[in-house]
View 1 (cartoon, rainbow, N blue to C red):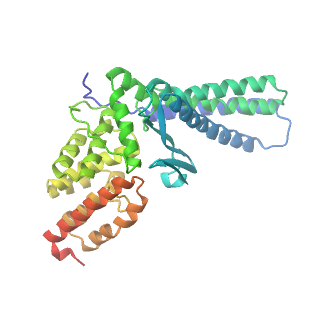
View 2 (spheres, rainbow, N blue to C red):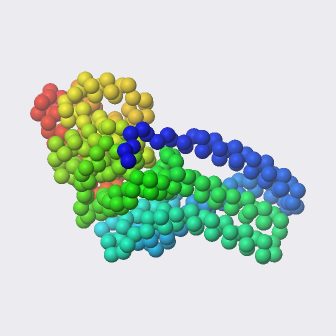
View 3 (spheres, one colour):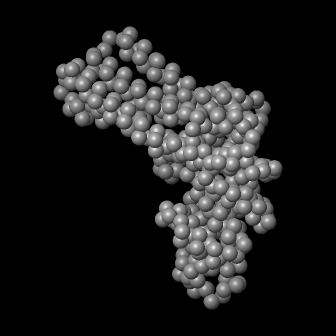
Length: 371
């Protein structure tokens, strides 16, 4: 079954719905609070603590559940990040890192255990199952243990955040992030289970330099987030192999329609690949027009000298579009720093090798650009 029309991104309607529900909840909470509370804690402090506790715990429940049920479902954990603290498995060793390095994200990345049979439904439902269990357990404890009305109200209303999280993670629609419900919908409807597992193996290979990336052929013109992820992994594979024709083929495949990509990281990679194809084909006038027709956010991605992936395009922009000595020198001087910040070690080495070749090409063709 071919997918030719992009799935609509329903993030904003969902966000607005959640805000409306949150306002209703705040009003109900205020009424309950004023009718039951006899202490001295300020109502706004009470609300702030409730929101903070509810927001943090619902995400933590989900992540822990994702880890536990993924292990049961035949997966290994490659990456775990919870706001300020993160863990990743690199070459068989678990390493801890400061969560802010990954933009304070909250996610779990899994990969199939080669010695076990995988249950995709259990892995994708695991975090949400834990949210349901945590909510029911909270309500049971609150109504069975002797406690004040203030404490009961606090935990009852904070547990409602679990419901919001459950809906956000399991809605079978496209959101800004690749949520479990949408992944399961695509897997079931288009029979993409094997491709999903292949993507997870390739993701593990990005984190672990001892693992090999695998190229997936015959993806055709089917466009959906899982297939587009496979196309992006093909792009990473081509860069690691340093095969120019294969890189062109992968870039062309990704460029067919970037609207199908879900997730900030992969969306940025797809945009870079689209511009990089123009660089490889020496279509510098087209690149210039394309660059200036983009919105400011997309232009920042392509000219970002702190990103190892973006530097491929940044160097071409400075050396072939702008003919800027200073800009070219700044981009080339940023390679070493950008490599240290790049989280995929083996892929980073391949990117640096490619960037050095681009540098030599531009300087050989335009020696006057050397400072």
